[in-house]
Length: 144
Image 1 (cartoon, rainbow, N blue to C red):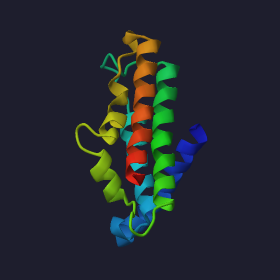
Image 2: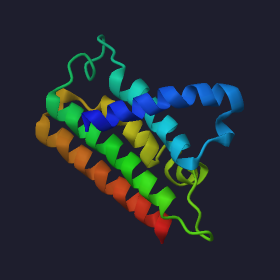
Image 3: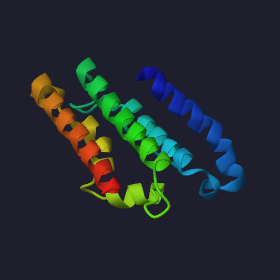
Image 4: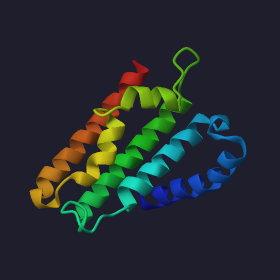
């Protein structure tokens, strides 16, 4: 998982120059997904706030659960984009429209960092597991 995240961040770094030259619209859909996931990794996974109770100390199980869900979203997204048919085309816009918003899966992935470690490992891992089920269901609904 860690190497997969490093690959995503490296790819995002490589794509940044292309985006500056020709714009984001010229990228392949899988590259747009990579940029979105890299943003989530940097802004929601790697960024920390030492003054907050949920972020000053992140237990290993929470970090692993967050990584799993981010990588799951990315992997299923790549698979959905690659396996899309002409009549059921999956683009980054479709993914954002279907899974975005304040109650969507993308928001919930970004909000994983707000889980309180003081609630305990069982509670946090149950929430992470529920989110991974929601991610799978959201991608399944794209195919239906």
